[in-house]
Length: 125
Image (cartoon, rainbow, N blue to C red):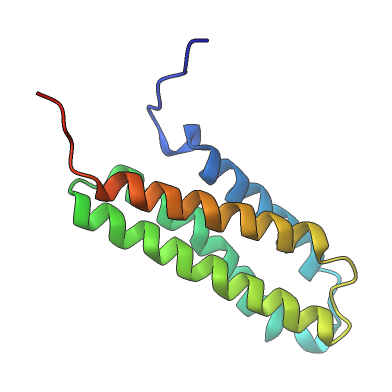
């Protein structure tokens, strides 16, 4: 099996999944009550948008420490998303949060593995 060379942040599966989650969250929050459009929905949208953005920054920037910084920022954002989705669910605004919560967990695990892989020094001769 031949693996595809990763040339852009768009080639990263974790970016693809976080982008897809962002689209799903934007769609779900558009159905929130009008009174929540400028508060909870906006916070959720801002948090979820930061996940793929920080992954893209981390991919593009040079230096291990800088990459880790942005990937950890994405990890913090996905945690914020999960907390806000749970809040929205408990307030009755998010009718079916299960898929988003599950996808958030998948993204979290992928980001942790990415951070770990970047943290390991290059051992090429």
